[in-house]
Image (cartoon, rainbow, N blue to C red; front, side, top):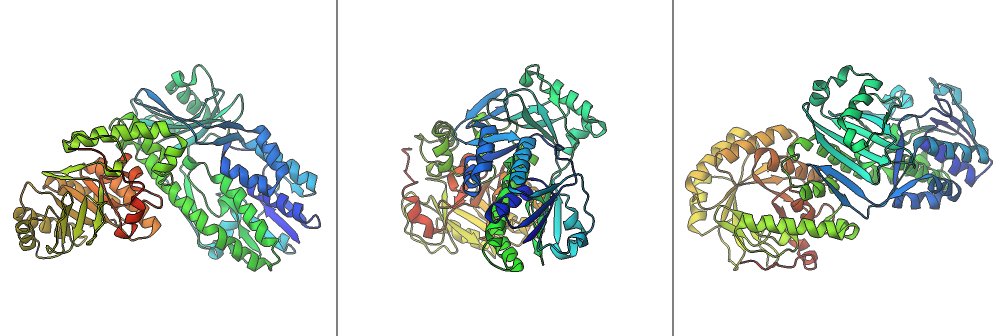
Length: 588
């Protein structure tokens, strides 16, 4: 085959290595607009699992990579004057330039042709190529020039960030949250060799402008960071390398291939830097693409198979990255309001891909401390004596009603693992220690009175998404429902999150005790509902109920401990999986 890669970043170079290694007769050309030694940014990060993938794909480059990286297991979180360390995470950092050099040298050794300082503005010059890779990054010329074929969509994050470097050798992957007179600043920092570390500084647009950094050049930005983080840097200097303030672009494409042209790496997709997966995704794209091209299919068939394999994985990671991005966008809602242990736990589980038990496997001491903290707060909130145990087993008070645990079932169930069972009518048989709620969908005042007479513990209003209808229905039901008993409102987790948060704030002021977020049983919708629940709890100050699995991420325990919800809706069909996770605590 004759293969051309437009772009000499990790995706293009690694694909060239894998194809030339498989068949030296392939003619492979890598065309890069920058020079061989030009690079932007500082370090890249790989997880231990990603390094294992590299080892299986090409042992020679893997060996060179592992000789060059700095490895760590710890994450340090600097928050509210404290530094909390979590261990067991398994990451490796290395210089981006070193990685490129390793891949360039491996390509050269295998006979790949590398052409640097060469602009490409017309694919016609490569008309005789069997396969063309668009590996030209997030600002891909190929993608833009053929937008009608690929259907790109780019969403720009509102926060501002800048890539800096420093000579301070951070001992762990480090997050710093620091407030000054302008606002709150976030730092993502990690060492990538013995002498240097990446230092990404992030903040909101408003804080960035108040600090005057919208008018700052690279030198002024570095000087500002040195002053603000003088204590943390311990006299070390900031370094710049195209250190320009920017917003993060999340790139998605309707199609990744067209004929003999295929998008890989950042040209096809991006994931927010807070989960450190851009280079990982690019190189794993190359592994998958090489596998399918080597598989004997025609080129269009191989490209279709590559996209079919990679798209679900990438989209799942992009959902996690979006959730992480939104956590950093809204850090102000947590800062100064959460205790250090809960803030750290929320940070570590922010992407909703790390479950409570997964985190326990990595760092049992931190999880034990978080469970003790949660049990203490649950005891104080419920007015009960509680021993530490699974967070989902902790009691929760809504007015005079104290639920035995944090799990909610919809529909009749004989399972003993739920603290609240939600029904659609007042016809029910009660079990000791299990509260019963009824969902009202019409004639709210009359049905609320009937539910009160039947001894129902809680009512939930299922109303139209229109705020006026919601408030009218709520006022009618609240007037007919005993003040000592809690009342909930079920809200659709729609596209306008700000409007839902404002509605929850108004409902709370009128006596609403719980907001239940309805979402489609689809991963993106469930993650969005959990993120919205988080906002409602912290911005509107009202308790929330949200769906969360216990046999798949996200799980109920992590949602509860992080403060993303107060109660979790679990389908009764999942009750058997609760048996090992649910150990009732002693409370009285």
